[in-house]
Amino acid sequence: MARTAHHRRGITGVTIGIAAVIVLGGCASSNADAPETSSLGSGIGSGVTTTVSARTSAPSSAAIELLAQIPIKGRAPKTGYDRALFGTAWTDDVTVEFGHNGCDTRNDILRRDLTDLTFKDGSKSCSVQTGTLRDPYTNKTIAFTRGQDTSSAVQIDHVVALSDAWQKGAQQLDTQTRTNLANDPRNLRAVDGPTNQKKSDSDAASWLPPNKAYRCQYVTAQVEVKAAYGLWVTQAEHDTIADILATC
Image 1 (spheres, rainbow, N blue to C red):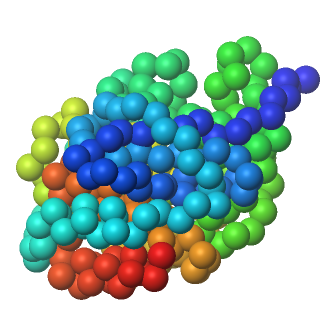
Image 2 (tube, rainbow, N blue to C red; image 1 turned 90 degrees about the horizontal axis):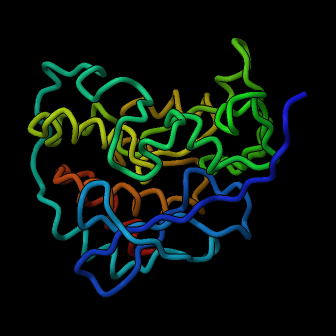
């Protein structure tokens, strides 16, 4: 029988040269009272941790200040984009949080964002078999069961889509840095599968979570990731993010 474990989200963070903390909503706020993941990217894959309440909104002034540091440019052509350029999917061979812990990234995020977990016997609490997700994008509660016909109910979203990242500076990064980006917990959320499919590779100017209460945290995460990896935003993307942060 699968072993059962109750899981609460870990906490991550990286300080930047802004005297404030930007709160991330976490891949899913699986429990409104649980500690929330927060990190501020001063460097790729390094950081210190900070604990914040999942109910706390990101300080808009800090997020806006960080946004102001991100270059505004046009979208580069998608020419040459390939998922393989961001490394093997869900590889553990990265230098970001959870890297080299013996579990693949997908299971790391499921363990972080789901509650009421069970694991495959013999997997050393690595292979998530079942769990419950409080989806941040829709605010729905979703039961997760691993299986060919059921796993897709919960998907792992890249908050900054890899294709979008490619068109906004990632093609200039080396392969290891792109692999870090694709597996960085700051850029990953366990979410409702169909909603993730609708998002596809959209940026904030063309897609936002249906759950409006999560939008401040969502765009704050995009700002953090793009700043940490030296990516840029389009003018429309910048303006959308700025408008949302102004209401946080």
